[in-house]
Structures are given as C-alpha cells and as structure tokens.
Amino acid sequence: MEFVRDRGTLIWNLAFPILLVFGFAFAFGGGGDDVFSVGYLGERPGDLEFFSLDHIDFVEYADRDEALEKVRYHQIDLVVDVPEQAFYVNESSTNGYLVRRLLTSMHGDRFVQQTVAGRPIRYVDWFVPGLIGMNMMFSGVFGVGFVLVRYRKNGVLKRLKATPVSALEFVSAQVASRFMIVVITSVVVFTATNFVLDFMMLGSYLLLLAITMLAVFCMISLGLIFATRIKSEELASGLMNVVTLPMILISGVFFSLEGSPPIVRTVSRIFPLTHFIDSARAVMLEGAGLAQVAPSMLVLAGFTVVFLITASMLFRWE
Amino acid sequence: MESIIEVRDLHKSYGSVKAVDGVSFSVPRGICFGLLGPNGAGKTTTIEIMEGILRSDSGEVLFKGEPVGAHFKERVGIQFQSTALQDYITVRETLELFGSLYPHQRPIDEIIDICSLSDILDRDNKKLSGGQRQRMLLGLALVNDPELVFLDEPTTGLDPQARRNFWNLIGNIKADRKTIILTTHYMDEAEILCEEIAIMDHGRLIAQDSPPGLLSSNFEGVLVRIPVEQPPESLPERAVVKDGFLEIETNNVEEELRRLIDLHISLEGLSIHSADLDDLFLKLTGTSLRE
Image (cartoon, rainbow over all chains, first blue to last red; front, side, top):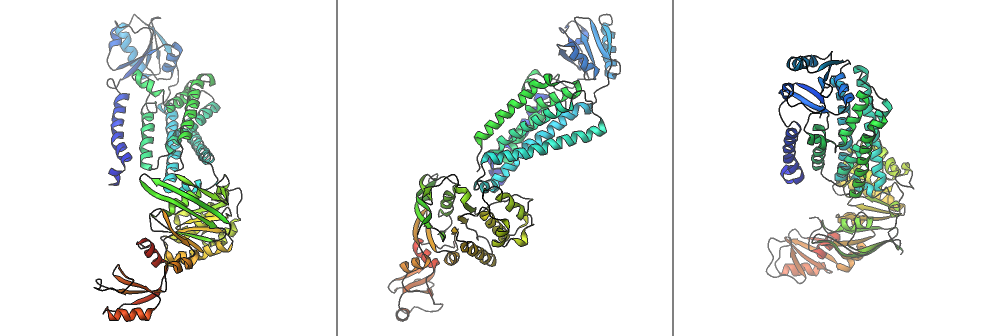
C-alpha cells in the first residue's frame, strides 16, 4: 500500500520506464547501426552511387581541419572533400582501408587519395571524460539532493531551524563539503586510471581541472533544486533520475552524438553534462585552449547561477 | 512575578481544524511550567509557535515583555518531540557541532554532567537507546546555556525507570534557575515537576494554576469509587457513573458509605483516594488523559 499511496513514487515508477524507452528510441532513432562513418566537405553529391550506400553514416563537416582531426584519431573512417575532388584516409585504420577500397572501386578516377597519419584515439581516451562527468553528476545531484531531503524528512533540518543558523549558512556548508568531496574523487579517479591507461592528453591539466570544478558546482546546484522542499526520498530520487538519465542517454557519455538526428544534438545542448563532456574532450583529445572551451564554460556558469537562484527561492526548512 | 514569556490570543488552523484557538498565558521566570492535554489538544502546536518554528495565524508571543526578536533563538533551548540526529557522529561530536552554532555556549563538560552523558560520549548517535537519546537531546537543548528551555513530551515512550532518571535531570536544570516549559500527557510527571500547569483541550486552555490550587478549586474532599456492573436504580446525591465506576466526591466518607449501604449498593472493590490530576482531567474534559 505504501507503494500505491505514495503518489509521487507511483507516478515516477510508471512514468520513468516509459520515458526511458522513448528516450532511447529518440536517441537511436532513424535506422539501424552503421558500419562505417564517412565525412564530407561541400555539397553531398547525390548522383554518386557511393553516397547512396546503406550502412555508411555520412556526416557533413564545414571545416576541413576539424574533419582531418577526426580521421587522424580514427573517429571517422574517411573524409571526402567534394569541391577539391580528394579524399583523406588514415593508413593505419582498417575501416579506412575498406571504405577506401569501396570508394575507389566505385569512383576510382574521381577523387585523389591523400593520407593522414595519427595514433588512434582509443575508446577509453574518448570515454574517460564521459565517465568522470557521469560520476560527478551522480554524486553532485544525488549527494546534495538526498542528504537534504532525508534531513528534512527525519527532522534534522527542523532541529537546525531552532538554532541561530541561517538557511544560507547551512546550505553553503553542505555545498562546500560536497564540492570538495566530488572534486577530490574526480581527480583521484582520473589520476589513478591515467597512471595505468595513459590517456591521450593534448591540452592543459589546469584547464581540465577548472572545467571539472565548474561542472561539479553546476551539478551540485542542480541537486539543490530538488533538495529545497521535497520531503519524500522516493519522490526526490524519481525526479533526480528524470533529470540525470536523459543526460546520460544524450549527452555523449557512451556514444558520440555525431550522426544523431539534429534535434537530439539540439536537445543535448541544454544539458550541463554535455558541455562538460564536450569541453573536457576538446581539452584532452584536441588540445583545446581556454578560448575554445570558454563558451561551454560560460554556459556551465550560467546554468549554475540559474540553479542557485531557483534553489534559494524555493528553499524551505520543512 | 516577572514573566519570561507570554502568549496572547494565539490562533492557528490547519485547514478547517482549529489546532490552537485563542490561547493566552504567561510563564513566570524560574519555574517549570507544564502544558498538559490529550493527544491532539494543540500542545505541540502552541509550543512550536512559542519556539518560533511555526507561524501563528494571529496572536503574539512576548519574550521578556518584548516581541520575539533576532536573538531569541540564542537564548532558548529546544527539545522537540521527535528529532533525528545526524548518523555516524558521536554524542560528543554532536554536542560540539551544535555548540558551535551558537555565539555563546556552555562548557561541554558541564552539559555532560547535568545530563549524565559521560557513559555514552563516544557512542554513535544511531546506537542510542530511547532514554540515552532523550538525555542527549536534552543536552543539545542546553548547549547555548539558555534562559528558557522548551521540552516537548520528553519522556513519552520511555520506560518508568528512564522516566524517573529524566525527571532527575530536569531537577538539575531547575536548580540552575532556568525556566522550563514542558508538555506532557503524564499527570504524575506534571505533578512532580511543575510549579504551574495549564490544561489544554481542543485548542483551548481550560484551566491554569498550581497543581494543588487546581485540585482544591475543583475538588472538595476525597473521591469514593466503586466498580459497578450496571448503574444502580437509585443513585445517591452527587454520584456519577462513568467507565464502569460509581464515583462520589465527598467531605464525609462515613456518611456517604452509610448511604450507599442503605441503598443496597455493593461496596466490593471500593477505593477511597484524594483527587489527583488524572481525576481533574477527567472532570474538566470528560476524557481520560491516558487515552
């Protein structure tokens, strides 16, 4: 009966799996798995047979350097520069070899081969910012959210209300302690795994740390919103899942959003996690400097401010 | 006597239920003031309005003659009816933590003494028994050396021995010249601890005086009680039948007994006792306090 009568929990237990299924359908929408991924510059030549092959994911790039980076690190198999009548392939890539053979056998005389060399980005290099981001999101959002909701439910907050401590002081202390915990665990996880796996790191560690700290603060502020007045841990957990799981699905934690429907990519821009993962990847895999990641950092800072203001307006001791 | 805290015409409703419906009283400095009443009478609502935890719909609370101000919370100590404490910290750490929240604090060793906490100082909060927990919460209410201490049903749920121990602690606090406001639904507790009591029912104050004063103004003499299976056909004057007992309040026991015998009422199981607060409560509210 507790399950049925706790309305909030019941609704989320029903609504949540449904949302999850739709979320997946949305993210993976539009056809099955593609075997190869081919980039092109310029207008897609609709008359060429190669470009109408099934099971190749064609991605348009506006910038040649960006596309070549992708080939260099094996993130796409080949790039066709349509206006220049050339294609670029990485000689150490097996997929690149197969796609190249396909292209030259179909339109052998049309494009000139150019090669690009580079160490492949292993999946783990690419995955580690996503993993740390995900971990940071869970411990930030759930850490602060759960603790305050539990304190409210069992009366710890009421007892504190009877002391001269102000809500602002109490919440700031909670945020500060959680912030230190999450930043330290993120750094420890990164350092320990880096020691063994030697991640590709083309940018500055300091910048990566700055982005991490900003993102942790942002996630904690997000958690605070749930912690402001909810009394039931079950409801809080449901709501927090509703916010965090879509972020895991479509902010590029496990798989790249390149080639997802444009609407998915647009939606992913409203998730703070996306901005952290993108900028952390940019720093690690592309050697991006402050100027390149500044827009994402500004977005994160903006989110943090909005979350904090919302939380402070909603906060109740009881 | 100078009053330390006074409430005037408090009202508080939850929806259509009037939890507190026009309560006024004042508490003199240095006494233990008992707020009594059955469950749901409005005791906790009243005390939480006084503590500043709840907002009243109307009415005011005066602390030393002034409206409650910013420093009120620093001068009072509060023990709620039920409070969870942070897990994974010990009793000593909890006392230190709460002490650090106040600008003025009493040395922790004194608190440990007053509340007999020395045996459980290093125990984790979540491993405390009911009685130990209440001692600890009382300690928390005293960390800022308050002038006024609110105790909301501090002994509810404790075994008789733990209750008696707790009464001793309250005695220690009284010896410190602090004012105590206590809610309880144990009459014996109020009778032993309180210099003055107020009885609440249905959100209203129905009586306020010292325990002997209340008794003498409501009862004359003693109570004679006889268990009866069904109400006798003819009742003596002033006799009432309630809950399977025939009760007569009288100044002259012998005469009353003679009349009962004349009416052929069996005296088996007869008891005579002087009225206590339980009887007073029954008389005033028509319900037993222990329900």
